[in-house]
Figure 1 (cartoon, rainbow, N blue to C red):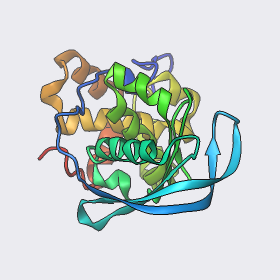
Figure 2: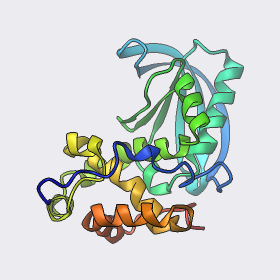
Figure 3: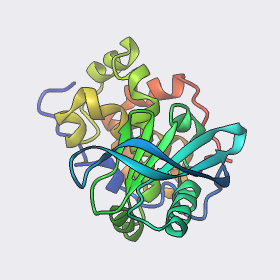
Figure 4: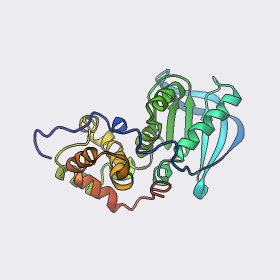
Length: 232
């Protein structure tokens, strides 16, 4: 890194709402109700793990990927199904590589930040409305699913750590402040913008990303991730 070089962004989910949009294709296939069952979920409304008799749905994506949606019974069963379908359609727009380790969805009410990790995507519905209004729901899912499916394999990989040292700076202040926890998730969205959606971003944004993290971009490129349905 170049001493004194500041990251160009605070957080990358906000840089452009059109990296992925609702008009883009989705790998979502179907949702099948699976009754109810006791599930342990993290709920940011109470900042703790909770056990709930959740509504359960089996969500299928192209390629045979099946994810269990676990919905807090604070919703009605009808609403739980509708929310599962709504979010699954959006999740299907992000690269299949990011779904590799996603086994469950936790869906709660409340305006709390979403989360990744734990082989899961954590969703709070009122916060989802905020993301939808800002046009960045897909971008947020990229960030959170990168935590789930990329961090464990890449955050401490030798090639990634070398790229961090070789690049002039971090892509965002959030990544700089949390280099082990947030750098992959913050950087990967900008890689998708550069690599697959460069026609959707401004020349200035393109050049800013490329100047900040060229070696990280090359690291991602070398992994040959499955980006379907993006770029198709």
